[in-house]
Length: 79
Image 1 (cartoon, rainbow, N blue to C red):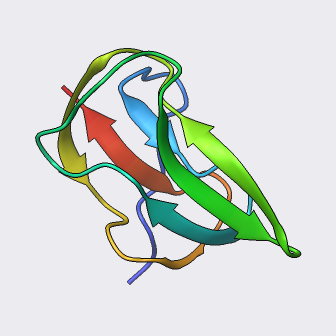
Image 2 (spheres, helix red, strand yellow; image 1 turned 180 degrees about the horizontal axis):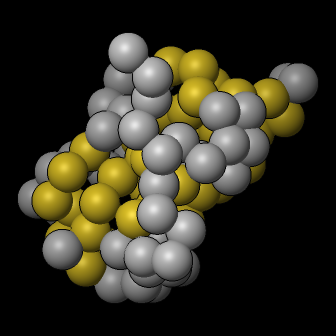
């Protein structure tokens, strides 16, 4: 099954920015602020933060466990 892709035009979709190993640091039901780190991504032994573009509640967490993901994959949905 192919990974679900984020809707780039939807600010409530948080996407994986580039290929790497993704680890969420939030859970469904968590309230997040704009700019808050919601996950980390590791690639080529470097780690970067993935942040929420807008405030909201995590209503769906697509990548809950550490796993490989590609750029554009849907990480989570804010409500």
